[in-house]
Amino acid sequence: MIPMMTSSSSSSCGYLVQVGGGGGARRMGVSSFFGQRSLSSSVNGSSLRRRRSDRSSTCAIRASSAPVVSAASTDDIAPLMVRAARGEKIERPPCWMMRQAGRYQKAYRDLAEKYPSFRARSEQTDLIVEISLQPWNSFKPDGVILFSDILTPLPACGVPFEIDDNKGPLIDAPFRSMDRLKELTPIDLDQLSFVGESLSLLKQEVQGQAAVLGFVGCPWTLATYVVEGASSALYKNIKSMIYSQPDLLDGILSHIADQIAVYAKYQAASGADCVMMFDSWGGQLPPKIWEQWSLPYIKRIVQSFKAEYPNVPLTLYANGSGGLLERMATSGVDVVGLDWTVDMADARARLGPDLGVQGNVDPAVLFASQDAIEAAVKDCIQSAGPRGHVLNLGHGVLVGTPEENVAFVFDLAKKSTYSS
Image (cartoon, helix red, strand yellow):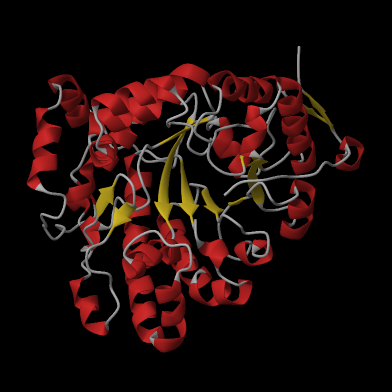
């Protein structure tokens, strides 16, 4: 899942890139916040809740006192990444990295050894906060993203899953018949309280020095797991459902879209300054099929979210999206994330001047010399232009990436300046 990009002259951009020398809101339970009590369910399992309650009392006290802070900041100066996503004039490109918290970091590996269950690491407030802050403590990125998984909300919607160390996520009974639709439930945010608590705590920790980032999976990508029952290389079941059972697929996608919209708004209410939308497997569809079976459901989320949080930027990322860019531009999001296979200057031309971009340095470059890394980063910044660019990789940080090279990229971003 990884490879490359080309360069563009700085003179064509009309500027020079130099690389070198609130929160007083009262805390409310998720049910009272949304005006109705969520349906209760046991899909997360009492054992996991017990493990959460057995963890250190320090984090429990902090979480219980953490305010829910609206992401629609009233501060005079919003975090740099928020201003970039809104297209405001900024002094340098903000930088964060997908999978910036992960196995390439020794701190994460040490913690994972102590807590080997991914579900525990991503569903216990104190562990989520600790892991999310590991790259913040090491590199001070401009965005601190919640450590979680796109599948995290599924059990709260009536779709339980397990994670196998070798096979990844597994859904015992995939949804492939109309009678299964009745098993889908309204999202129970009480089961996801660790998400809201973690975002609120992260907001307190970074103190406005970085944007706190929430994220959700897009309906098509989540539906691939719901229908296939596991990760897939071919997506035969869900792709054939487009033609054999379109009403069933529409029912699944519509339900997911409506619940993810609620989940995204919950994240914003809990302190997320920006929300990422990952259509990880959207690039597996031909562009016209993506336009029919992914885009409308993304728009459904965006419209619902923006009706309540118009000033909270949304970023849409789809891996392998080179053929989708013009269609992604119609989704209503503020920023389009680019993978490493798309030329940044070409993407800018195709998306137009009013839409922000994120990306898109090849993650493999971080295994190269620092001279090569600097050249790739500088080319990306120059090609993107001085407005509406969030510097990132074109995919997540790869396992084995030298930590010093990750630090080097963040340092380059901080030393970069825009001048007209």
